[in-house]
Image (cartoon, rainbow, N blue to C red; front, side, top):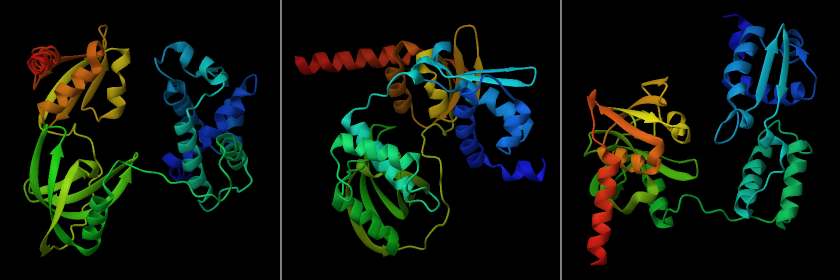
Length: 320
C-alpha cells in the first residue's frame, strides 16, 4: 500500500465517490485515468470501488432497473442513474423534518459551507415545511421516559450503580439487574446505555426505552473503559443458517454474518444468535422471504410455522 492509499481512509473514499458519481454521470464516458487524477483517487482502488460499491447502490427490490449502472470498458467509465433517481423525491412531513434536522447538524460541523448547496437545499425544504429561521424545533428521540434517561445519564456521570427493571426483546422476558453504567448514547434514533451487568458478569448494551424503572443502590463503582460497539443480537454461541429470498437479503447488511453465499435457491447466510426468541421473531418478520435451514449444523424444523400456530392458538384462546 502506498502512502497515498493509506491517506484515503473509508470516510475519504465515500466523500470522493459521492463527488465522482454525479460528475461521471453527467459525461458521456470518462477515462478512468482522468477520474483518478481529478479526484486524487488511486486508479486500482477506484476501479474496485466502482465495481464493488457504486454498482450495488439502488433501492428495493434491487432489480437491475433499480441499481446504478456502472460500465467500464477499455479504460473508459460510464455511470447511469437507475430510474428511481430520475423521479421527484416525495417525503412525508416527518421525513422532511428529520432531513432538515440532520442536515442542519451537518452545517454546524467546522468546514461546512454556510451558503453551499446543502444550506440552500435545506432552506427550500424548511420553507416548504413552514419553518422559520432561528425558531427551535422540539425533537423526541427513542420514546424514553425523561426521568429514566436523566437517572441513567446522572449515574453514568457520577459512577453510581443502578438497579433496573429491564425487558429483553431477544428473550421476551423481564428481569431485575444491577448495572454499572459506563455511557449513555444515541444511535439510530434510540437511546442506549452500555454497562457492566452483574447478572451477566460482562459488559452489555441496554436499550433505554426497555428499562421500566431505575433505582440507585447507593454504591459507587470504578469505571470500566471497555467500549462495546456491537449492538446487534447476532453474536451469540448458537449458529443458524438461513436461506433468504430477495426481499429478505437485507438481513445480511443489518446483522454481521459469519458466512454467506449465493445459491440457485437463494442467498444463504450464517448468523450467531444468543436466544431463539429473537430468531423466531425475525423469521415471522421475514415470512416467505426467509427459511431456517439448520441450527448448529443440524436440520431445523419450520420454527416460523410453529410460532405462527402458537400465536393463532393464543388469539383463539383470548377470543374465547
